[in-house]
Amino acid sequence: MAPTAVYDEIADWYEHEFLGGQSTGARTRDGNPLDLDSVLRHLLGEGSGTCLEIGCGTGVHAIQVRELGWTPIGFDLSAGMLRHARSRLPTAQADAEHLPILDDALPAVIAMMVHTDMPAYPQVLHEAARVLRPGGVFVHVGVHPCFCGGFADRSDLDAIVIRPGYLDGHWTKASWTDQGVRAKVGATHYPLPELMHALLDAGLTLERFSESGEPTPAVLAIKARKSAEGGPAGPATGTRAGPGRRPVEHQPVISPPVPRRE
Image (cartoon, rainbow, N blue to C red; front, side, top):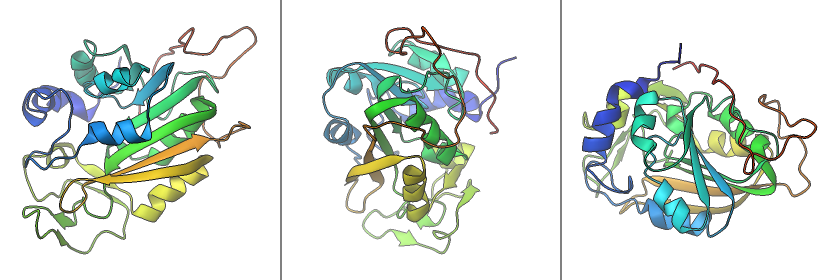
């Protein structure tokens, strides 16, 4: 039996109401522009070869990835979200903590607005580093840990109120609005140092940073790279390369997903 993901219950709402028919998830429910297209263009940049999106959801970022010259593919745990994504990019249902991809196989991996949906995001980063080829690029784009969370009241964008709670990593459904994703499925908060340390512990080298959203940033984006020398990224486990096996961008290797705790 395929694993059940919490996003299965809200997939149609997410596609038709939350995104509002947009080609990208570029705005929040309150209309605050996030400019995710520009962020991705600036940090991922133009390139070629396969670009894996971890937690691709409904696949709304595939068009931008394709415009930059990459070939997008997407993995997600939610069958409901993938039902909407399949018309936008090749997909597979898979657990981000156990990516069914060969070691050192991909030139680029991205994670777009998903890290708060992943209670074991540090493990996901280890997996991203594992499947990247030496010199490969990883782009993290997520809600800003300093200004978004259950501790942040964003009801007035000109006067955001930060209450106690930022310093503690935690999962919560607390939100200033009942119209957002957090109130429906919850979210995991990672304080900024914890997020940065997770990237470094995965063996990734931080290169560039970006913030978006006005007047107070709602998005923090990070470009990182796997060392050109390669080597192990950490204790992550997954599909390993073997004799005679070619990299995934020429011969994708998809194995049955391992259920992830929701």
